[in-house]
Image (cartoon, rainbow, N blue to C red; front, side, top):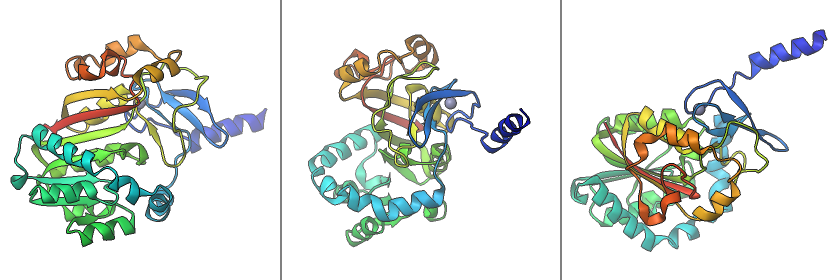
Length: 300
Ligand SMILES: [Zn+2]
């Protein structure tokens, strides 16, 4: 009896879990995994791990292991025509001409997108990356490469026009700190672009199904539309466009038992007009069942 009480007391001291996005401390188990559990926040329905890796473990992991294992060079090279179209899209959304613009790609990998930006005439192109090989490749191609720890010193406040996060925020220990520090570096009205895995708004209860790609320590965050909106608005941005896409119908079927549509309807009403019906109704407010989110927002 005494041991149990003591252990319970220790657990409370040792594991003061708070939601990494909305900082709420009310959570419940979401899905039990062999070496770690997924848990869900009551307020923003963000799903995250009970135990998170240290900064040291993560930086070592990404500086040495990630790029070779995932064939980043080949993957990125095959995306060049996508990058050309995507850069045009960013220019249109930012309402600036390339010659007067600076762009930072957070988690640029081998920075093929930035090489494209440079050839379009962007005045300053910056890649943020842990991987040493990827950084060397960028420097060789005239790209200004820094590691995440150098961001606050190397980039002037209020100097950036466009910042891109493509499949990045879900890998970070604290996305809130990064979004706030990037906000300082952007000009007023500067654009951020986010794309990453998306999960619909889930009920605050245990799930019978695991989440897609819930691989530790690569994916640390499983954003709901509520937690993504909270992250972006709470870090000083106005959302101008937000939708999801890819396998919308399959994903809706996969998570049909988990979705809390009434909660979604209520909590992100301000996103009713920011969607894109090209991807279908369920890719937008309030269902958001596409496998990936796409968001454009500007610094307030
Ligand atoms: Zn939360």
